[in-house]
Every structure is written in C-alpha cells, then in structure tokens.
Image 1 (cartoon, rainbow, N blue to C red):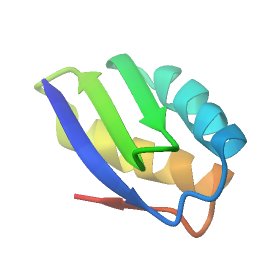
Image 2 (tube, rainbow, N blue to C red; image 1 turned 135 degrees about the vertical axis):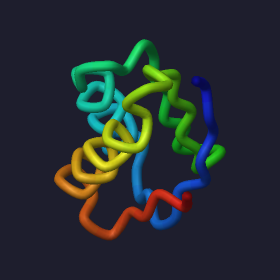
Image 3 (cartoon, rainbow, N blue to C red; image 1 turned 90 degrees about the vertical axis):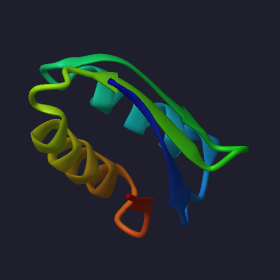
Length: 72
C-alpha cells in the first residue's frame, strides 16, 4: 500500500534525510521518501501490517525531530 502524509514542523533537509533512512530500515517498508521542501512523507509498505508500521514510522520521526508531526 502506498500513501502520502503531510508533515508539520519539519525543520531541515538533514532531518528529512535522517527520517527517510530510519523509515526505510523498518521491517515491512518497501520504500519511503521524506521531502523537506514539500513537507510530505510518501511510504510504500505491507498492506497487512500498515497501521503497525505507521506507528513505528511516527516513533522514528519523533526520535529525529521531536516537534515534527505526521498528519494522518
């Protein structure tokens, strides 16, 4: 399943790159991109575990950028 989410308070391109790398390491994620300019997260992950994967994604984003919010 491929979905797009708007990000709020993503402060820098370096943080976006760190988030993207962390998200790609999560089991079940096929591909992910975090765009600093567009303030968007695009993720392609397993359909069966998508909700659980998204919880891990939100945690990974908070570790890199505590103020960043994934608007679901």
